[in-house]
Length: 101
Image (cartoon, rainbow, N blue to C red; front, side):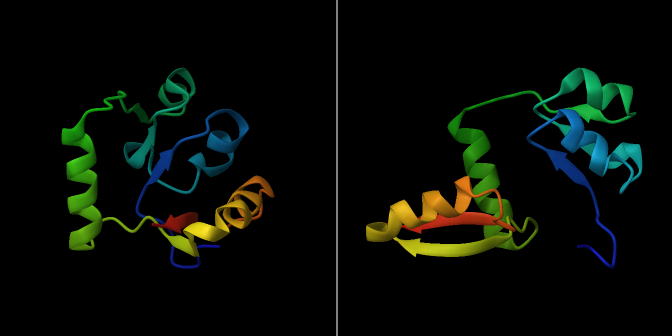
C-alpha cells in the first residue's frame, strides 16, 4: 500500500488496527487519538482531543498548503449522500469519502 514508506501514523481506531501499523514508522512518529494506553505501550504518543475551531482552522490550513493530504478517494454530490455512506460502511474505502455541498 505504501511502497515508499510512510512519514508517520496518526491512528483514529486503536486496538488491532494500531498494532498492525505501528511497525511502519519510528515510534517517535506514531500518534493515536483513539487508544492512548496502547500507543504509549508501542512507544508512540497520544494526541489530546480538542474540538475547538482553532484546531479545525489549523487542519484546513495544513490541507490547503499541501502539508497534509487527507487522501480523498471519492467525492459524491449531495444528492448521492446515501451512496457515499454505503461506500464508507462497506469497509472497502481506500481513503476519505466526501460529500460536496
